[in-house]
Length: 180
Image 1 (cartoon, rainbow, N blue to C red):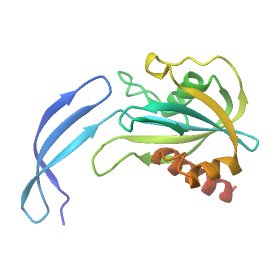
Image 2: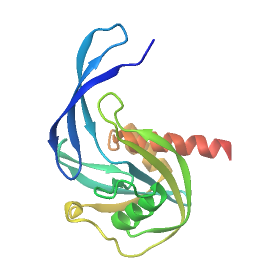
Image 3: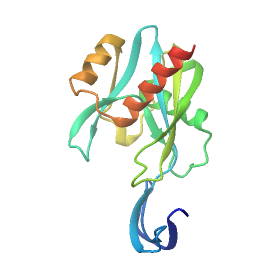
């Protein structure tokens, strides 16, 4: 069967961080439909690991109306063609002040493939050095802390860490550790 085909597309909304479009589509059986898509630039996520300790950031997530712990991550609006490794190093430094002596690619993550085109690359950052953070204006409420892996696991089990990208990246880390 042929995949879903786009017949036409119209932009519904745009800002510096995303575009929302509505596509008229034709399904494999020939029937017509519509598909709403959120286009966002590629992102990078970093798991900063210092021995047994994971560095996380916490910030208020407006759509959820609550503060959430997660791994440092972000995009480069206006610079969507930024190399993922360069983006990862920038996000790590920006959000935590940390610089990594070593960055290992763990894999690619799709944010929400049923509604968004956004993809990202997850990295493991080790050999960490501390420095000043360089947070963006939107990140002024952000804080960072490190947690033992046992505490991280408890936070996941208790629902204190629910960020899908952070959880998926952690699964990639566990697979990476099994293979090495």
